[in-house]
Length: 129
Image (cartoon, rainbow, N blue to C red; front, side, top):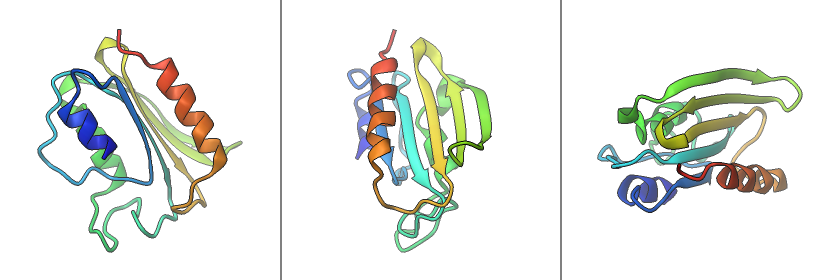
């Protein structure tokens, strides 16, 4: 649902955050870039990181970068953060927006309390300029 808001209401939605989801629609065409923060677990059996599963989802990294693909976002980081056991990717996009994907290694589809803190921090830090 969050992806659809970013795709269809980018004039008023400045940022979204989601946990364990994937963009299932190829017709995403926002008119403005939207800040996106996605949290995933590489062991998620419901929405597998590499795609497939019972919902036949696309791979997470591919679906994640689809929303702002036409805005020429610039990749800034990718790698594993050893302290948190997180594989992190981020891109800077126009108008002060950013895309950030945190793939928590050894996590599944469950919600962790720390996710709430990450999400709130990201959304408050990324108003559209």
